[in-house]
Amino acid sequence: MKKPFSELVEEVKQLDPDEKLALKSLLDKYLIEERRHEILRHYHESQHEEADLSFSSDIDDLKAHLSE
Image (cartoon, rainbow, N blue to C red; front, top):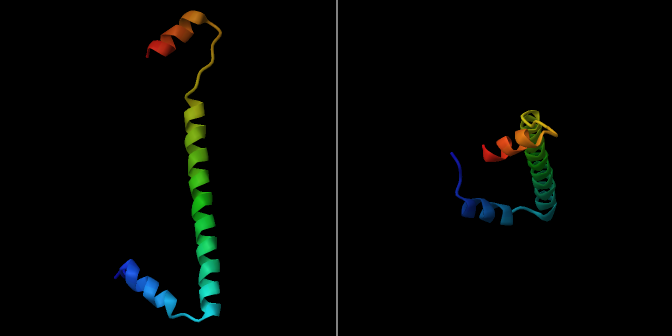
């Protein structure tokens, strides 16, 4: 069962300074990991979008793509 945020904050307040530092370190690592996953997801999305791109020097072809 998930605790309300306010209860969690109160529990963190009760930790000794070493435990708070350890928790901060863990949270920093978790946030970095989440950000890396987000960057990887965006990379994969951009790779997928890039695969759908087409290039042309034909002006009529370019106009047709713009009107789509």
